[in-house]
Image (cartoon, rainbow, N blue to C red; front, top):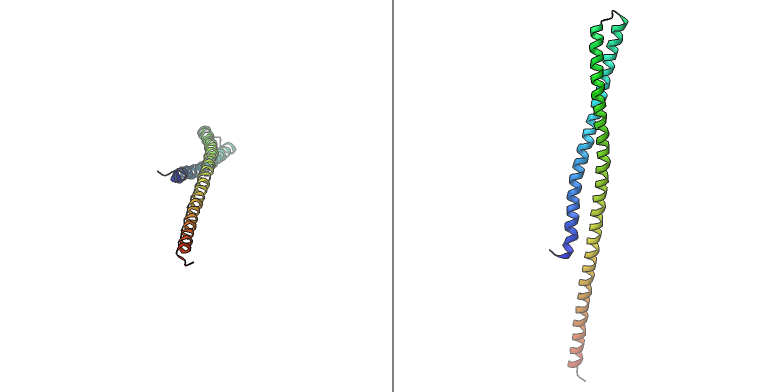
Length: 151
Protein backbone atom coordinates (compact mmCIF):
# COMPACT_ATOMS: atom_id res chain seq x y z
CA UNK A 1 0.00 0.00 0.00
CA UNK A 2 1.34 3.37 -0.97
CA UNK A 3 1.99 5.86 1.77
CA UNK A 4 -0.40 8.30 0.12
CA UNK A 5 -3.26 5.76 0.33
CA UNK A 6 -2.96 5.28 4.11
CA UNK A 7 -4.89 8.47 4.89
CA UNK A 8 -7.65 7.50 2.49
CA UNK A 9 -7.96 4.08 4.13
CA UNK A 10 -8.04 5.62 7.61
CA UNK A 11 -10.69 8.08 6.45
CA UNK A 12 -12.76 5.21 5.06
CA UNK A 13 -12.48 3.35 8.38
CA UNK A 14 -13.71 6.43 10.20
CA UNK A 15 -16.60 6.77 7.73
CA UNK A 16 -17.52 3.14 8.36
CA UNK A 17 -17.43 3.70 12.11
CA UNK A 18 -19.57 6.80 11.66
CA UNK A 19 -22.17 4.86 9.69
CA UNK A 20 -22.38 2.20 12.42
CA UNK A 21 -22.60 4.83 15.18
CA UNK A 22 -25.24 6.82 13.32
CA UNK A 23 -27.32 3.65 12.92
CA UNK A 24 -27.01 2.99 16.67
CA UNK A 25 -27.87 6.61 17.38
CA UNK A 26 -31.03 6.44 15.26
CA UNK A 27 -32.09 3.17 16.92
CA UNK A 28 -31.47 4.62 20.38
CA UNK A 29 -33.47 7.77 19.59
CA UNK A 30 -36.34 5.62 18.27
CA UNK A 31 -36.23 3.40 21.38
CA UNK A 32 -36.22 6.45 23.64
CA UNK A 33 -39.22 7.88 21.81
CA UNK A 34 -41.03 4.54 22.13
CA UNK A 35 -40.33 4.52 25.88
CA UNK A 36 -41.66 8.07 26.22
CA UNK A 37 -44.91 6.92 24.62
CA UNK A 38 -45.13 3.90 26.95
CA UNK A 39 -44.51 6.09 30.00
CA UNK A 40 -47.29 8.45 28.88
CA UNK A 41 -49.64 5.49 28.28
CA UNK A 42 -48.95 4.13 31.75
CA UNK A 43 -49.68 7.59 33.17
CA UNK A 44 -53.05 7.53 31.39
CA UNK A 45 -53.82 4.08 32.83
CA UNK A 46 -52.94 5.28 36.32
CA UNK A 47 -55.32 8.23 35.91
CA UNK A 48 -58.07 5.85 34.75
CA UNK A 49 -57.68 3.62 37.81
CA UNK A 50 -57.55 6.65 40.12
CA UNK A 51 -60.83 7.84 38.57
CA UNK A 52 -62.33 4.39 39.27
CA UNK A 53 -61.25 4.63 42.89
CA UNK A 54 -62.82 8.10 43.20
CA UNK A 55 -66.05 6.81 41.65
CA UNK A 56 -66.11 3.77 43.94
CA UNK A 57 -65.51 5.89 47.03
CA UNK A 58 -68.13 8.48 46.02
CA UNK A 59 -70.95 5.96 45.67
CA UNK A 60 -71.34 2.57 47.19
CA UNK A 61 -67.92 1.75 48.59
CA UNK A 62 -66.86 -1.37 46.71
CA UNK A 63 -63.69 -2.24 48.55
CA UNK A 64 -62.90 -5.07 46.17
CA UNK A 65 -62.81 -2.70 43.17
CA UNK A 66 -60.84 -0.13 45.15
CA UNK A 67 -58.33 -2.70 46.36
CA UNK A 68 -57.90 -4.16 42.86
CA UNK A 69 -57.46 -0.67 41.37
CA UNK A 70 -54.92 0.28 44.04
CA UNK A 71 -52.91 -2.87 43.32
CA UNK A 72 -52.92 -2.08 39.60
CA UNK A 73 -51.88 1.51 40.29
CA UNK A 74 -48.93 0.37 42.40
CA UNK A 75 -47.85 -2.10 39.69
CA UNK A 76 -48.19 0.54 36.98
CA UNK A 77 -46.27 3.07 39.08
CA UNK A 78 -43.43 0.57 39.55
CA UNK A 79 -43.39 -0.22 35.82
CA UNK A 80 -43.39 3.50 35.02
CA UNK A 81 -40.45 4.07 37.39
CA UNK A 82 -38.52 1.24 35.71
CA UNK A 83 -39.22 2.67 32.26
CA UNK A 84 -38.11 6.12 33.42
CA UNK A 85 -34.84 4.65 34.62
CA UNK A 86 -34.32 2.93 31.25
CA UNK A 87 -35.25 6.24 29.58
CA UNK A 88 -32.56 8.01 31.61
CA UNK A 89 -30.00 5.34 30.71
CA UNK A 90 -30.89 5.75 27.04
CA UNK A 91 -30.39 9.50 27.44
CA UNK A 92 -26.92 8.87 28.84
CA UNK A 93 -26.25 6.45 26.00
CA UNK A 94 -27.29 9.12 23.50
CA UNK A 95 -24.86 11.60 25.01
CA UNK A 96 -22.08 9.00 24.75
CA UNK A 97 -22.98 8.07 21.18
CA UNK A 98 -23.07 11.71 20.09
CA UNK A 99 -19.65 12.28 21.63
CA UNK A 100 -18.29 9.24 19.80
CA UNK A 101 -19.85 10.42 16.51
CA UNK A 102 -18.23 13.83 16.98
CA UNK A 103 -14.87 12.20 17.69
CA UNK A 104 -15.02 10.02 14.58
CA UNK A 105 -16.12 12.96 12.44
CA UNK A 106 -13.15 14.96 13.67
CA UNK A 107 -10.79 12.05 12.96
CA UNK A 108 -12.23 11.60 9.46
CA UNK A 109 -11.86 15.32 8.73
CA UNK A 110 -8.28 15.22 10.01
CA UNK A 111 -7.43 12.26 7.76
CA UNK A 112 -9.10 13.91 4.77
CA UNK A 113 -7.12 17.09 5.38
CA UNK A 114 -3.84 15.18 5.65
CA UNK A 115 -4.68 13.22 2.50
CA UNK A 116 -5.44 16.45 0.61
CA UNK A 117 -2.16 17.93 1.83
CA UNK A 118 -0.29 14.81 0.68
CA UNK A 119 -1.99 15.01 -2.73
CA UNK A 120 -1.07 18.69 -3.02
CA UNK A 121 2.56 17.90 -2.17
CA UNK A 122 2.59 15.05 -4.68
CA UNK A 123 1.04 17.24 -7.37
CA UNK A 124 3.54 20.01 -6.64
CA UNK A 125 6.44 17.55 -6.84
CA UNK A 126 5.17 16.12 -10.15
CA UNK A 127 4.68 19.62 -11.54
CA UNK A 128 8.14 20.68 -10.39
CA UNK A 129 9.69 17.62 -12.00
CA UNK A 130 7.71 18.19 -15.20
CA UNK A 131 8.82 21.81 -15.30
CA UNK A 132 12.42 20.80 -14.67
CA UNK A 133 12.26 18.24 -17.50
CA UNK A 134 10.68 20.77 -19.84
CA UNK A 135 13.34 23.31 -18.95
CA UNK A 136 16.09 20.74 -19.48
CA UNK A 137 14.65 19.75 -22.86
CA UNK A 138 14.38 23.41 -23.90
CA UNK A 139 17.98 24.04 -22.82
CA UNK A 140 19.10 20.95 -24.75
CA UNK A 141 17.31 22.19 -27.90
CA UNK A 142 18.83 25.64 -27.54
CA UNK A 143 22.26 24.11 -27.06
CA UNK A 144 21.78 21.88 -30.12
CA UNK A 145 20.50 24.83 -32.16
CA UNK A 146 23.49 26.90 -31.06
CA UNK A 147 25.88 24.13 -32.03
CA UNK A 148 24.17 23.54 -35.37
CA UNK A 149 23.76 27.21 -36.20
CA UNK A 150 26.09 28.57 -38.89
CA UNK A 151 28.61 31.03 -37.57
